[in-house]
Image: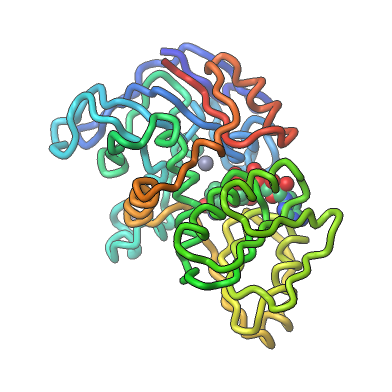
Length: 334
Ligand SMILES: NC(=O)c1ccc[n+]([C@@H]2O[C@H](COP(=O)([O-])OP(=O)(O)OC[C@H]3O[C@@H](n4cnc5c(N)ncnc54)[C@H](O)[C@@H]3O)[C@@H](O)[C@H]2O)c1
Ligand SMILES: [Zn+2]
Ligand SMILES: [Zn+2]
């Protein structure tokens, strides 16, 4: 089968003929229909320091996908051939303290699809049935393809009560844009999105931001202060601005992957009595249930999808991402 992988320890990804995935009795074999490109894939493509430390070579990459169940493991009873599925790409150990407490998203032994184990940028992927998500028919193939990053937005945005709150979202990439839609849907009062890219801010406005600010050009002014902050840029500068702009007692959820030695004004955090929560992945599986319900209740993610390309055009997709000339990019494997 065709697959896209990291075949050499240097920048790039390569299309190759991979063997069909091995599936066990608890797995599903899924015919991949579409995948989407994530910042993580770009890190792997570019072979940065994190990727060099983390990615085994060779590996088939990719973790965001939608597909159709092609084969069902002998122990699996909850799925059948032909089911429309997306997948939770964090495969947990099931044995550690967190897993045994039912908080799977906190498993320290998590293996990432397309990061630590064979991924979904391929015609077929094998996945534990535990990780598969049945996609209701009213959710389109395109939206189903980006359920994983939407789950990141849902997990972050619903970490704190947003009803009637003044929410600051730093970073209006695809996930920040989706967070604007969630904040609007659940009844936030003001939703202020910041970015340093005007096109992305325009998208955030379309998705539900009440105000957008390009902080490269304009100051982040909001005299009353924000009660909830969703950090979705991974930028030191944005975190500093957020801490300054919060009210006393404000709550901050951190999704953006900040660099290892990010600094934090501890004095402000303490004297403002701020609450900080790091977010990794999605809660298994309540985030998925909430995400699907929010879509059924009318959140539309189609505007976040900017490009649909055949999988063979992946180089073009990464080029668009590198220049931030895009929202979510879908690769078609059919
Ligand atoms: N914690 C997790 O589990 C998890 C999962 C997925 C993504 N992420 C991270 O979440 C973040 C958002 O994901 P995405 O796919 O939307 O990424 P993205 O890179 O497309 O978006 C980040 C946005 O932040 C903007 N930005 C950069 N500097 C800024 C600044 N100083 N102020 C405001 N905005 C600034 C960029 O212009 C960009 O539009 C990324 O950092 C990503 O790595 C984390
Ligand atoms: Zn992703
Ligand atoms: Zn575990």
